[in-house]
Image 1 (cartoon, rainbow, N blue to C red):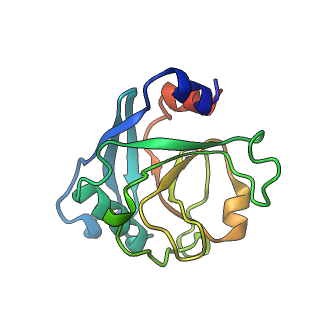
Image 2 (cartoon, rainbow, N blue to C red):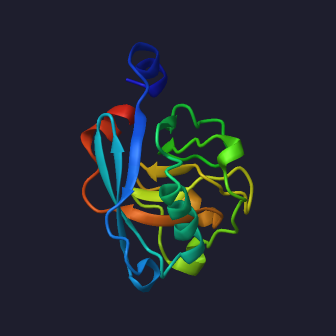
Length: 173
C-alpha cells in the first residue's frame, strides 16, 4: 500500500525518538550505534564519524537536542512516483523538524570523500540543493546508484540489521 493511502487510513507514523546507544568518545570511534524508535518498530543504525564527521555531527545534534521526537517518515520515493524526475531514487524520508528549530545547513562530505555508497539500508541526509542539508534524512530502499554518481548526497551510516518489515510496508513492497 503506498504511504499516501496508508497515511489517509491510519495514524501517522511518528518517530517516537532517536536515541543514542553509545555516547562516550563518539568521534574517536569508528562507528556510533543509534536506534530510530517508531510506533511500528525500531531501526538499528550505525554511523561513521571518522568517515563523515560533519554529517554525523549534524545528525547527532538533532538527536541530542531531542528534535526528532514526534517527527515522522513523510515521503516515499518509488519508481512510479519518481518516473518524471531527473534523479530517480527509492527511499523513505523522515525527520521533518520545524524550520525554526533547524540548525544552519551543512556542507556535506560526498561519496567520493567517504567511500560510502547509497546501498540498500544506507541512511543519508536529504537536501534541496548542494550544501543545504539540515534535519531531513532518508533510508535507501534498494541500491541508489544515481545518488552516488551525482556525488551530491552524503551517507551518514548504514543500518546494522536488515530493515524492519514495516519499512518495506511503508515503501509498498
